[in-house]
Image (cartoon, rainbow, N blue to C red; front, side, top):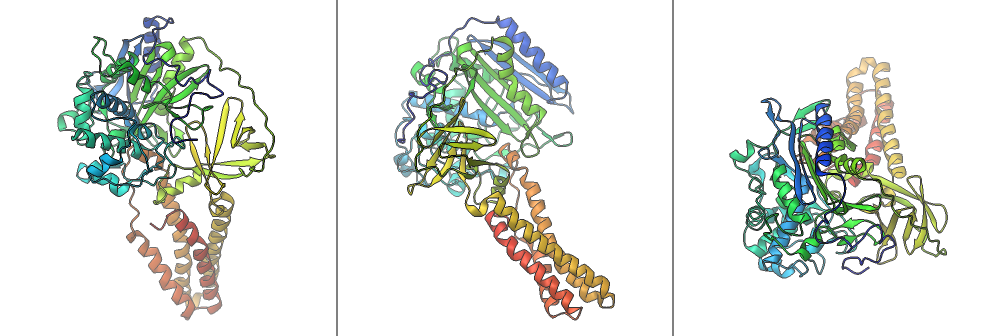
Length: 619
């Protein structure tokens, strides 16, 4: 495909309309506003009272009017401060994307920047340089189709003194470019932050000030800010965040390194004002226009996708099929907070919910807060509007070709590849098995080939990308990009290496222990031999400890400060192992036992080393 946006001529054009969404949300017939408000009020109140979140704020816009704006539970349970939709500020994480895209629209409307113009000349004038495609536009960055991966470590810092200016941070920590612009939708908060920095260059003022000038103040969002270092008066009104551990535990406030991507602090009432502008074609309820109706359509119209048959992204939101309807959503995950904004144009409905509880328990399991926030809009639509079925899409068979080389393991592409967080890829993978030249199986589901590198299973499609040499390199789904794993990184090979290495280390420990028991009179030498073997096992224990911390990887995306992996922490086991290595070789204990210990531990370490380096666990 070309580097531009996919055309609307997809096989699901009827279900996933590309340009069929009007620039403003249509006024619709349906449940009365009072009925929608009453259902939402009762639903959220019941869930918060059941302990699914410490507190929540909700705003519902229906047919252009704010029909519900309410708080539930506590913003600060210790001081029994209630959630208030107008006064309680919340951190909304990636929901910031909507406000950042709206800022770009407003800046473009004022002639400050052009969304479709190559931005490299602007970078050059401001001395900014990062790896990038030959041509790059703000639309590429805002639709996450610029091709950048992501970096979880460093997105948030524990203290405001650790914050770097956005320009310096991005030049030092920008993740690699893994795809060409327009090749696929690969979500990247760093790419979105680059869009914010580009707007800074165009306007000649910091992004938080630009957003305040062209969006927040004109829209009446007087309680909102992108300032990464909010003053004390604002901090005192932010709801206290909570992490789901054994119980809900308060977490300290941290600070975003990427304000345009995740730094918006706002209220439910302010988001309601923004949603009114978006659903009213770019105008406030009083008729004041912030941007044109044509520009507004970019917020509720598919601008990029992994294939015309798949859902895609607008300039600000993610497209999700719901029966025959389309819901445009954006979810925000910040440490201790979960938020989501949803717009259903066909129903004249827009919903915002934010809760001061984390979205996940452990690595991948949604917390009760996460379920509440994630499901509110879809449960509301299912309860209040008659269900509509998605149109049946027939599967088209094609003849086999000579490119049936899709089988293998694929790992999530948007992850730190040069930090220990790469190890998260071990837990996030899919396997493709080939049944024939035209049929593959992914996670137990059979897909039929319907086009060149394109497969279908009912309403679901997957597509494969190839390198210039013709090798399959990526698997694409609706909102996901998976990179094909090299042979050494496949689960089978890694498990074999780790299993043999741990077995040898354990054997070394057992032999040394046996030597200690049998040769009790020479217990000092054998005790040191045991220390050598246990040093090897200590390394395995250290890796396990590292991986335990890495299970917080997704929480990093929610705002957790980076976990340090200092070299100093490796010196104790490494020093003990080196000492015991030479003592076991030349010591005066039982030689055979000592040498068996030495051989076992050494081979274990040798085999484990490539695994550790592959996943950056020696960093």
